[in-house]
Image (cartoon, rainbow, N blue to C red):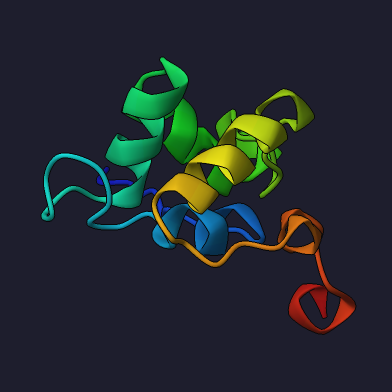
Length: 94
């Protein structure tokens, strides 16, 4: 039987990651690759931030230990990123 696993893109992680699309050394790199390189993580570790807990993800949450580094990188690369964007907004969660 063929089982298709649907990949979710949970918020707020998905939106934060996408802000880094095309940043860094290669303008064609996806945000997950750019952040992985900057944070010293694998791309799949970054992608797990956008997956449900049932799929070994974080449920859309970026681990707190990366907030400051991501915010500093955003400033360096002229990415508009507010610390409030790391939190799920009620209108997105509904």
